[in-house]
Image (cartoon, rainbow, N blue to C red):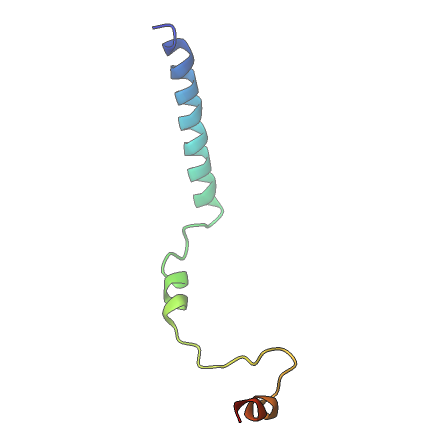
Length: 64
């Protein structure tokens, strides 16, 4: 029973901290665009990026 004097205030403080951070994240716009990042993953980028310092002529020679 004596542990309840410690556990109840700790749980109330922890609950208040969680509610505060949920409120803060909503106020700063964390939940404004929930679908944008998911669509960006699915979009196929057809641009092939060459490794730095390597040209198409270098890659053609290395394929021989």
